Image 1: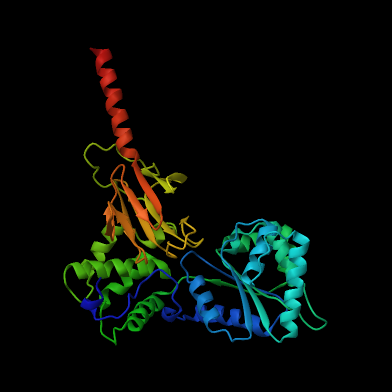
Image 2 (image 1 turned 60 degrees about the horizontal axis):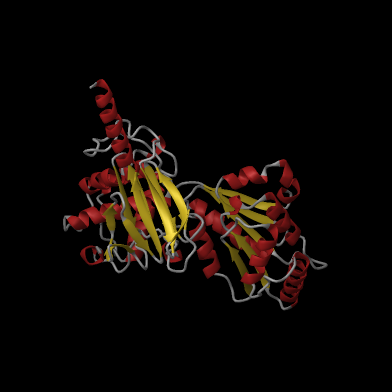
Length: 414
Protein backbone atom coordinates (compact mmCIF):
# COMPACT_ATOMS: atom_id res chain seq x y z
CA UNK A 1 0.00 0.00 0.00
CA UNK A 2 1.03 3.66 0.24
CA UNK A 3 2.26 3.70 3.86
CA UNK A 4 5.97 3.79 2.99
CA UNK A 5 5.55 6.56 0.43
CA UNK A 6 3.67 8.82 2.87
CA UNK A 7 5.83 7.73 5.84
CA UNK A 8 2.82 6.53 7.85
CA UNK A 9 2.60 3.57 10.20
CA UNK A 10 -1.15 2.97 9.80
CA UNK A 11 -3.80 3.44 7.13
CA UNK A 12 -5.44 6.75 8.10
CA UNK A 13 -8.80 6.34 6.39
CA UNK A 14 -10.04 2.84 7.15
CA UNK A 15 -13.82 2.48 7.22
CA UNK A 16 -13.72 0.27 10.32
CA UNK A 17 -14.60 2.14 13.56
CA UNK A 18 -11.20 2.39 15.27
CA UNK A 19 -11.47 4.33 18.58
CA UNK A 20 -7.91 5.65 18.37
CA UNK A 21 -8.86 7.62 15.25
CA UNK A 22 -11.95 9.19 16.83
CA UNK A 23 -12.18 12.91 16.10
CA UNK A 24 -14.19 14.60 18.83
CA UNK A 25 -16.07 17.43 17.20
CA UNK A 26 -18.30 19.44 19.54
CA UNK A 27 -21.22 17.23 18.54
CA UNK A 28 -19.31 13.98 18.96
CA UNK A 29 -18.04 15.10 22.37
CA UNK A 30 -21.58 15.93 23.47
CA UNK A 31 -22.94 12.58 22.25
CA UNK A 32 -20.11 10.78 24.06
CA UNK A 33 -20.87 12.70 27.25
CA UNK A 34 -24.50 11.62 27.00
CA UNK A 35 -23.40 7.99 26.73
CA UNK A 36 -21.10 8.36 29.72
CA UNK A 37 -23.94 9.85 31.77
CA UNK A 38 -25.70 6.48 31.73
CA UNK A 39 -23.06 5.16 34.12
CA UNK A 40 -24.06 7.68 36.79
CA UNK A 41 -27.78 8.14 36.13
CA UNK A 42 -30.24 5.29 35.82
CA UNK A 43 -33.47 7.19 35.39
CA UNK A 44 -34.00 6.73 31.66
CA UNK A 45 -32.76 5.88 28.19
CA UNK A 46 -30.15 7.73 26.15
CA UNK A 47 -30.92 7.89 22.43
CA UNK A 48 -28.22 8.82 19.88
CA UNK A 49 -29.18 9.15 16.22
CA UNK A 50 -27.22 10.11 13.13
CA UNK A 51 -27.00 9.58 9.39
CA UNK A 52 -25.17 6.57 7.96
CA UNK A 53 -21.44 7.13 8.38
CA UNK A 54 -21.79 9.93 10.96
CA UNK A 55 -19.59 8.10 13.49
CA UNK A 56 -22.10 6.49 15.86
CA UNK A 57 -20.38 3.10 15.94
CA UNK A 58 -16.94 4.64 16.50
CA UNK A 59 -18.37 6.59 19.44
CA UNK A 60 -19.80 3.40 20.90
CA UNK A 61 -16.48 1.56 20.52
CA UNK A 62 -14.65 4.45 22.20
CA UNK A 63 -17.19 4.55 25.03
CA UNK A 64 -16.80 0.80 25.59
CA UNK A 65 -13.01 0.95 25.61
CA UNK A 66 -13.00 3.59 28.34
CA UNK A 67 -15.40 1.85 30.73
CA UNK A 68 -14.22 0.86 34.19
CA UNK A 69 -13.85 -2.78 35.21
CA UNK A 70 -17.01 -2.66 37.34
CA UNK A 71 -19.24 -2.11 34.28
CA UNK A 72 -20.86 -5.13 32.62
CA UNK A 73 -21.90 -4.57 28.99
CA UNK A 74 -24.27 -6.24 26.56
CA UNK A 75 -23.83 -4.90 23.02
CA UNK A 76 -26.45 -5.80 20.41
CA UNK A 77 -25.79 -5.10 16.72
CA UNK A 78 -28.21 -7.54 15.07
CA UNK A 79 -31.60 -5.95 15.65
CA UNK A 80 -33.96 -7.70 13.25
CA UNK A 81 -35.09 -10.18 15.89
CA UNK A 82 -38.28 -11.43 17.47
CA UNK A 83 -38.91 -10.40 21.10
CA UNK A 84 -37.84 -13.78 22.49
CA UNK A 85 -34.76 -13.97 20.23
CA UNK A 86 -33.79 -10.47 21.33
CA UNK A 87 -34.02 -11.35 25.02
CA UNK A 88 -32.01 -14.52 24.38
CA UNK A 89 -29.36 -12.45 22.58
CA UNK A 90 -29.07 -10.16 25.60
CA UNK A 91 -28.55 -13.18 27.85
CA UNK A 92 -25.90 -14.57 25.49
CA UNK A 93 -24.01 -11.28 25.87
CA UNK A 94 -24.03 -11.88 29.62
CA UNK A 95 -22.56 -15.38 29.21
CA UNK A 96 -25.67 -17.56 29.30
CA UNK A 97 -26.87 -20.22 26.83
CA UNK A 98 -30.62 -19.55 26.83
CA UNK A 99 -31.73 -21.11 23.54
CA UNK A 100 -33.78 -23.89 25.15
CA UNK A 101 -35.42 -21.48 27.59
CA UNK A 102 -38.98 -20.29 27.25
CA UNK A 103 -39.63 -16.57 27.40
CA UNK A 104 -40.68 -16.64 31.05
CA UNK A 105 -37.42 -18.43 31.94
CA UNK A 106 -35.38 -15.90 29.95
CA UNK A 107 -37.00 -13.01 31.78
CA UNK A 108 -36.53 -14.65 35.17
CA UNK A 109 -32.85 -15.28 34.42
CA UNK A 110 -32.35 -11.68 33.32
CA UNK A 111 -34.03 -10.35 36.45
CA UNK A 112 -31.90 -12.52 38.69
CA UNK A 113 -28.67 -11.62 36.85
CA UNK A 114 -29.32 -7.87 36.99
CA UNK A 115 -30.19 -8.00 40.67
CA UNK A 116 -27.03 -10.00 41.45
CA UNK A 117 -24.84 -7.51 39.57
CA UNK A 118 -26.37 -4.61 41.49
CA UNK A 119 -25.79 -6.34 44.84
CA UNK A 120 -22.16 -6.97 43.80
CA UNK A 121 -21.69 -3.27 43.09
CA UNK A 122 -21.45 -3.64 39.32
CA UNK A 123 -23.23 -1.46 36.77
CA UNK A 124 -24.94 -3.07 33.75
CA UNK A 125 -25.26 -1.29 30.40
CA UNK A 126 -27.26 -2.47 27.40
CA UNK A 127 -26.15 -0.84 24.12
CA UNK A 128 -28.22 -1.40 21.00
CA UNK A 129 -26.80 -0.22 17.67
CA UNK A 130 -28.91 -0.02 14.50
CA UNK A 131 -31.91 0.38 16.82
CA UNK A 132 -34.06 1.78 14.01
CA UNK A 133 -34.58 -1.83 12.89
CA UNK A 134 -36.13 -2.92 16.17
CA UNK A 135 -39.79 -3.88 15.95
CA UNK A 136 -42.38 -2.19 18.15
CA UNK A 137 -42.75 -5.45 20.11
CA UNK A 138 -39.02 -5.60 20.83
CA UNK A 139 -38.96 -1.94 21.86
CA UNK A 140 -41.77 -2.73 24.30
CA UNK A 141 -39.66 -5.56 25.77
CA UNK A 142 -36.81 -3.07 26.21
CA UNK A 143 -39.16 -0.71 28.03
CA UNK A 144 -40.14 -3.54 30.37
CA UNK A 145 -36.46 -4.38 30.99
CA UNK A 146 -35.80 -0.77 31.92
CA UNK A 147 -38.34 -1.13 34.71
CA UNK A 148 -36.31 -3.70 36.65
CA UNK A 149 -35.27 -1.91 39.83
CA UNK A 150 -34.32 -2.11 43.46
CA UNK A 151 -35.98 0.03 46.14
CA UNK A 152 -33.72 2.96 45.17
CA UNK A 153 -32.82 2.80 41.49
CA UNK A 154 -33.05 1.06 38.13
CA UNK A 155 -30.49 -1.69 37.60
CA UNK A 156 -30.13 -1.56 33.80
CA UNK A 157 -28.73 1.37 31.83
CA UNK A 158 -29.80 1.53 28.17
CA UNK A 159 -28.35 3.30 25.13
CA UNK A 160 -30.19 3.19 21.80
CA UNK A 161 -28.21 4.25 18.72
CA UNK A 162 -29.51 4.33 15.19
CA UNK A 163 -30.31 6.16 11.99
CA UNK A 164 -32.82 9.06 11.90
CA UNK A 165 -35.66 6.59 11.30
CA UNK A 166 -35.31 5.67 14.98
CA UNK A 167 -36.66 9.09 15.93
CA UNK A 168 -39.67 8.59 13.67
CA UNK A 169 -40.36 5.24 15.33
CA UNK A 170 -39.97 6.63 18.86
CA UNK A 171 -42.36 9.48 18.04
CA UNK A 172 -45.13 7.08 17.04
CA UNK A 173 -48.18 6.75 19.27
CA UNK A 174 -47.40 3.06 19.91
CA UNK A 175 -44.30 4.00 21.93
CA UNK A 176 -45.58 6.83 24.11
CA UNK A 177 -44.68 4.99 27.33
CA UNK A 178 -41.15 4.24 26.14
CA UNK A 179 -40.49 7.83 25.01
CA UNK A 180 -41.50 9.07 28.46
CA UNK A 181 -38.46 7.19 29.79
CA UNK A 182 -36.00 8.84 27.38
CA UNK A 183 -33.81 11.12 29.49
CA UNK A 184 -31.36 12.38 26.85
CA UNK A 185 -31.79 12.47 23.09
CA UNK A 186 -29.21 13.76 20.62
CA UNK A 187 -28.87 13.79 16.83
CA UNK A 188 -25.33 13.55 15.47
CA UNK A 189 -25.15 15.62 12.29
CA UNK A 190 -22.31 15.90 9.77
CA UNK A 191 -19.08 17.85 10.32
CA UNK A 192 -18.76 21.50 9.31
CA UNK A 193 -16.25 22.60 6.66
CA UNK A 194 -13.69 23.58 9.31
CA UNK A 195 -14.27 20.32 11.22
CA UNK A 196 -13.80 18.33 8.01
CA UNK A 197 -10.33 19.86 7.61
CA UNK A 198 -9.47 19.14 11.24
CA UNK A 199 -10.86 15.60 10.91
CA UNK A 200 -8.60 14.80 7.95
CA UNK A 201 -5.52 16.26 9.63
CA UNK A 202 -6.34 14.46 12.89
CA UNK A 203 -6.50 11.03 11.21
CA UNK A 204 -3.27 11.68 9.32
CA UNK A 205 -1.58 12.72 12.56
CA UNK A 206 -2.74 9.56 14.37
CA UNK A 207 -1.45 7.52 11.41
CA UNK A 208 2.01 9.10 11.78
CA UNK A 209 2.18 12.23 9.63
CA UNK A 210 3.93 14.15 12.45
CA UNK A 211 2.60 17.46 11.18
CA UNK A 212 3.66 16.96 7.56
CA UNK A 213 1.27 18.44 4.99
CA UNK A 214 0.05 15.44 2.97
CA UNK A 215 -3.11 17.01 1.49
CA UNK A 216 -2.69 20.28 -0.40
CA UNK A 217 -4.54 23.04 1.45
CA UNK A 218 -6.59 24.11 -1.57
CA UNK A 219 -8.43 20.77 -1.88
CA UNK A 220 -10.07 20.67 1.58
CA UNK A 221 -13.10 22.79 0.57
CA UNK A 222 -13.75 20.51 -2.42
CA UNK A 223 -13.53 17.41 -0.22
CA UNK A 224 -16.18 18.96 2.02
CA UNK A 225 -18.47 19.78 -0.91
CA UNK A 226 -18.38 16.22 -2.19
CA UNK A 227 -18.68 14.47 1.20
CA UNK A 228 -21.00 16.84 3.05
CA UNK A 229 -18.84 16.36 6.14
CA UNK A 230 -19.95 12.73 6.59
CA UNK A 231 -16.94 10.92 8.16
CA UNK A 232 -17.35 7.67 6.24
CA UNK A 233 -17.55 9.50 2.91
CA UNK A 234 -14.51 11.59 3.85
CA UNK A 235 -12.59 8.37 4.54
CA UNK A 236 -13.58 6.84 1.21
CA UNK A 237 -12.66 9.92 -0.82
CA UNK A 238 -9.39 10.64 1.00
CA UNK A 239 -8.22 7.03 0.70
CA UNK A 240 -8.95 7.06 -3.03
CA UNK A 241 -7.07 10.37 -3.36
CA UNK A 242 -4.03 8.88 -1.63
CA UNK A 243 -4.14 5.87 -3.95
CA UNK A 244 -4.08 8.27 -6.92
CA UNK A 245 -1.06 10.11 -5.50
CA UNK A 246 0.59 6.74 -4.80
CA UNK A 247 0.13 5.83 -8.47
CA UNK A 248 2.03 9.00 -9.40
CA UNK A 249 4.68 8.23 -6.74
CA UNK A 250 3.90 11.58 -5.11
CA UNK A 251 3.84 12.05 -1.33
CA UNK A 252 1.45 15.02 -1.62
CA UNK A 253 -2.23 14.72 -2.59
CA UNK A 254 -3.08 17.45 -5.10
CA UNK A 255 -6.16 18.76 -6.88
CA UNK A 256 -5.37 16.41 -9.78
CA UNK A 257 -5.54 13.43 -7.42
CA UNK A 258 -8.85 14.65 -6.01
CA UNK A 259 -10.25 15.04 -9.51
CA UNK A 260 -9.07 11.53 -10.43
CA UNK A 261 -10.67 10.11 -7.26
CA UNK A 262 -13.99 11.80 -7.98
CA UNK A 263 -13.96 10.42 -11.53
CA UNK A 264 -13.22 6.93 -10.23
CA UNK A 265 -15.97 7.08 -7.62
CA UNK A 266 -18.38 8.80 -10.00
CA UNK A 267 -19.46 11.23 -7.29
CA UNK A 268 -21.36 14.46 -7.70
CA UNK A 269 -21.49 17.13 -4.98
CA UNK A 270 -23.08 15.89 -1.77
CA UNK A 271 -26.04 18.23 -1.94
CA UNK A 272 -27.05 16.69 -5.27
CA UNK A 273 -27.23 13.08 -4.12
CA UNK A 274 -28.60 10.92 -1.29
CA UNK A 275 -26.51 9.88 1.68
CA UNK A 276 -26.15 6.45 0.16
CA UNK A 277 -24.63 8.02 -2.96
CA UNK A 278 -27.17 6.52 -5.35
CA UNK A 279 -26.79 9.44 -7.71
CA UNK A 280 -26.95 9.78 -11.44
CA UNK A 281 -24.82 12.05 -13.59
CA UNK A 282 -26.82 14.74 -15.38
CA UNK A 283 -25.46 13.35 -18.64
CA UNK A 284 -24.70 9.68 -19.23
CA UNK A 285 -21.07 8.64 -19.91
CA UNK A 286 -20.30 6.90 -23.21
CA UNK A 287 -21.65 3.34 -23.39
CA UNK A 288 -19.47 0.27 -23.77
CA UNK A 289 -19.44 -1.29 -27.21
CA UNK A 290 -22.33 -3.72 -27.59
CA UNK A 291 -24.01 -2.71 -24.34
CA UNK A 292 -27.57 -1.45 -24.24
CA UNK A 293 -27.98 2.15 -22.96
CA UNK A 294 -28.86 2.43 -19.30
CA UNK A 295 -31.76 4.67 -18.43
CA UNK A 296 -32.00 6.58 -15.15
CA UNK A 297 -32.44 4.12 -12.27
CA UNK A 298 -32.28 1.10 -14.58
CA UNK A 299 -30.56 -2.10 -13.42
CA UNK A 300 -26.98 -2.37 -14.65
CA UNK A 301 -26.36 -5.85 -13.29
CA UNK A 302 -27.09 -8.38 -10.57
CA UNK A 303 -25.01 -10.20 -8.00
CA UNK A 304 -25.66 -13.68 -6.65
CA UNK A 305 -24.28 -14.40 -3.17
CA UNK A 306 -23.46 -18.06 -2.59
CA UNK A 307 -22.11 -20.15 0.28
CA UNK A 308 -21.17 -23.80 0.01
CA UNK A 309 -22.37 -23.88 -3.59
CA UNK A 310 -25.88 -22.66 -2.69
CA UNK A 311 -27.21 -19.26 -3.72
CA UNK A 312 -28.52 -17.49 -0.62
CA UNK A 313 -29.22 -13.99 -1.93
CA UNK A 314 -29.71 -12.03 -5.15
CA UNK A 315 -29.34 -8.25 -5.42
CA UNK A 316 -29.89 -5.85 -8.31
CA UNK A 317 -27.21 -3.24 -9.01
CA UNK A 318 -28.16 0.28 -10.05
CA UNK A 319 -25.84 3.30 -10.37
CA UNK A 320 -24.46 4.01 -6.90
CA UNK A 321 -22.42 2.28 -4.21
CA UNK A 322 -23.07 -1.00 -2.37
CA UNK A 323 -20.96 -1.61 0.76
CA UNK A 324 -20.55 -5.25 1.85
CA UNK A 325 -19.46 -6.29 5.34
CA UNK A 326 -20.19 -8.12 8.58
CA UNK A 327 -22.11 -5.46 10.51
CA UNK A 328 -25.72 -4.36 9.99
CA UNK A 329 -24.77 -0.83 8.88
CA UNK A 330 -23.63 -2.20 5.50
CA UNK A 331 -25.85 -2.18 2.42
CA UNK A 332 -25.29 -5.95 2.18
CA UNK A 333 -24.54 -7.78 5.44
CA UNK A 334 -22.65 -11.10 5.45
CA UNK A 335 -22.62 -12.39 9.02
CA UNK A 336 -19.37 -14.39 9.01
CA UNK A 337 -16.15 -14.25 11.03
CA UNK A 338 -14.21 -14.31 7.75
CA UNK A 339 -15.80 -11.01 6.67
CA UNK A 340 -14.46 -7.68 7.93
CA UNK A 341 -16.75 -5.06 9.46
CA UNK A 342 -16.64 -3.18 6.12
CA UNK A 343 -15.10 -5.67 3.69
CA UNK A 344 -15.58 -4.39 0.14
CA UNK A 345 -17.77 -2.20 -2.04
CA UNK A 346 -19.27 -2.39 -5.51
CA UNK A 347 -19.34 0.94 -7.34
CA UNK A 348 -21.89 0.79 -10.15
CA UNK A 349 -21.86 3.26 -13.02
CA UNK A 350 -24.13 3.33 -16.06
CA UNK A 351 -21.37 1.73 -18.12
CA UNK A 352 -19.48 -0.45 -15.61
CA UNK A 353 -19.28 -2.15 -12.19
CA UNK A 354 -16.13 -2.19 -10.07
CA UNK A 355 -15.56 -4.18 -6.87
CA UNK A 356 -13.02 -2.72 -4.42
CA UNK A 357 -11.44 -4.11 -1.27
CA UNK A 358 -11.91 -1.80 1.75
CA UNK A 359 -8.65 -2.79 3.45
CA UNK A 360 -10.24 -6.00 4.72
CA UNK A 361 -8.32 -8.63 6.65
CA UNK A 362 -8.96 -11.54 4.28
CA UNK A 363 -9.26 -9.57 1.03
CA UNK A 364 -11.16 -10.37 -2.17
CA UNK A 365 -10.05 -12.87 -4.82
CA UNK A 366 -10.69 -13.22 -8.54
CA UNK A 367 -9.42 -16.44 -10.18
CA UNK A 368 -7.45 -17.26 -7.00
CA UNK A 369 -5.59 -13.92 -7.18
CA UNK A 370 -6.03 -11.32 -4.44
CA UNK A 371 -7.02 -7.96 -5.92
CA UNK A 372 -7.61 -4.46 -4.56
CA UNK A 373 -10.09 -3.55 -7.31
CA UNK A 374 -11.52 -5.40 -10.28
CA UNK A 375 -13.72 -4.34 -13.18
CA UNK A 376 -16.57 -6.83 -13.14
CA UNK A 377 -17.42 -8.67 -16.36
CA UNK A 378 -20.43 -10.86 -17.03
CA UNK A 379 -19.99 -14.18 -15.21
CA UNK A 380 -17.13 -13.08 -12.93
CA UNK A 381 -16.95 -14.84 -9.55
CA UNK A 382 -15.35 -13.00 -6.61
CA UNK A 383 -14.33 -14.88 -3.46
CA UNK A 384 -15.17 -12.86 -0.32
CA UNK A 385 -14.22 -14.75 2.84
CA UNK A 386 -15.97 -18.12 2.47
CA UNK A 387 -18.69 -16.66 0.24
CA UNK A 388 -18.79 -16.24 -3.51
CA UNK A 389 -20.27 -13.31 -5.44
CA UNK A 390 -21.20 -13.88 -9.08
CA UNK A 391 -21.76 -10.84 -11.30
CA UNK A 392 -24.36 -10.92 -14.07
CA UNK A 393 -24.31 -8.03 -16.55
CA UNK A 394 -27.90 -7.06 -17.42
CA UNK A 395 -26.73 -4.66 -20.14
CA UNK A 396 -25.33 -7.55 -22.14
CA UNK A 397 -28.63 -9.41 -21.88
CA UNK A 398 -30.53 -6.33 -23.05
CA UNK A 399 -28.11 -5.85 -25.93
CA UNK A 400 -28.62 -9.45 -27.06
CA UNK A 401 -32.39 -9.09 -26.78
CA UNK A 402 -32.32 -5.87 -28.84
CA UNK A 403 -30.20 -7.57 -31.49
CA UNK A 404 -32.53 -10.57 -31.67
CA UNK A 405 -35.56 -8.27 -31.97
CA UNK A 406 -33.87 -6.34 -34.76
CA UNK A 407 -33.01 -9.56 -36.62
CA UNK A 408 -36.59 -10.82 -36.35
CA UNK A 409 -37.87 -7.49 -37.63
CA UNK A 410 -35.47 -7.60 -40.57
CA UNK A 411 -36.62 -11.14 -41.47
CA UNK A 412 -40.26 -10.04 -41.42
CA UNK A 413 -39.53 -7.03 -43.64
CA UNK A 414 -37.57 -9.28 -46.01
